[in-house]
Length: 119
Image 1 (cartoon, one colour):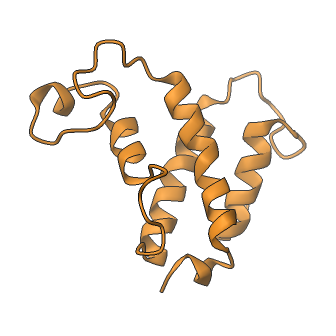
Image 2: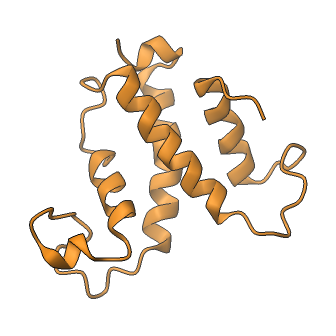
């Protein structure tokens, strides 16, 4: 099983992964990161870093990681994590998400359709 089982071609999947990747990179403070935001599972600084979740996700979904080798379950898990991240970025003032057409909500609608999640 692959991403094609989700009704996606590789270009669509690359586009879906690019949006949360940009958001995470833009929100991360890596000025003092000794690994330039490449997660190192044996370095205590990474293990206890407040940005470890983002680093792990970015490293598993970097532009250079082959998506062809990922299973449907892997893609679903990574998109779900990204969806949770984007949803967490929405402000409390963001009241009517269903009718909103901002970049965050437009991306969330696409991912929910791919994952067959109803709101």
